[in-house]
Picture: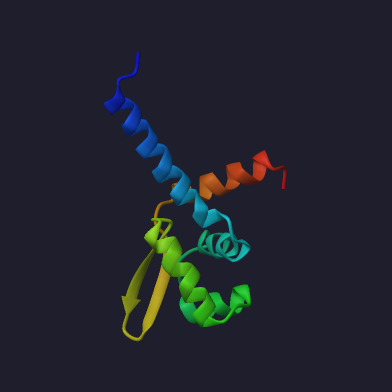
Length: 101
């Protein structure tokens, strides 16, 4: 039988997973992750590739960064973003397979 401490721990874990997966609920964020699968990209270039303003893009990147999906690196005047972990590519691939894209 699961005691209350263990049950609470499992609920907290489920909450963290659900919260992190919210990052995948917007098409722009999916497109960002898709572009970053190809490698590190500066904000200006990423904005052009996706077709959204830098302001809009920055909001989405901030959310993705807060959830741990991407990381940023500043080099001189430019900010570059990349996937936080290579396994994100695998996760996206599996999601596409599940929904048969």
